Image 1 (cartoon, rainbow, N blue to C red):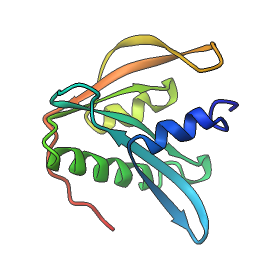
Image 2: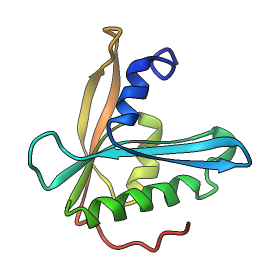
Image 3: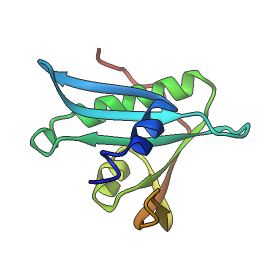
Length: 129
């Protein structure tokens, strides 16, 4: 939780394209992606986070579809993500394949386990606004 509340987390989200889902004035989900640092056909999915109360409501899937469509329109053919273990099932259901586990170093020096995943062949989606 310390990382999420740190300036490093905000910097990570602001470095790419971020989208939020709101119910009234409350943000209930956020998703973000960024282009690769080097020329590459693969973009980086920074994450899709949904408040637990709104899990399985389709909000995360709609945000992910929006990001995939935007990345595809920008010319990217794939998206990579270092997924937290709790997100692996959601991402697999959305067509992402596991590449393998790896540690993710946090600015504090701590490491957390993530599963590197990739979705190839970004397809067109109908995005609901």
